[in-house]
Image (tube, rainbow, N blue to C red):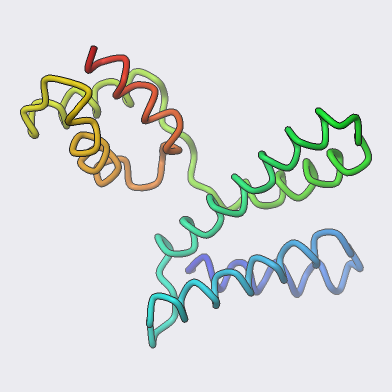
Length: 149
């Protein structure tokens, strides 16, 4: 089952169960996926990779908001964002363990022949292609920087 169909099914279940918060998040996600597909010019249904990219983007927004609200002592808003983040994380693939990330980055460094931080973009591009959405960019960037020193 595709992620789009999974989101639709979860939305219907949440509507029947009258889970207002979940309905709101899933509607937002569905809208964001459709908007991303329109931006891309896709005529067909978005792929799972497209949906995962949108979920990552929306999750990042929630993480940034949580940090801002916590800093401003707005725990009520931070808690709301945390709830939304938990719903979104259900649609992300399991994160790759640290050892596998390091092995993947070392492989990307060998393939690209990178020797300095100046070539970090090249390594990041290769590593992201290999990671296939199982590693967030921030973690991957940290490992690449550490290994390119």
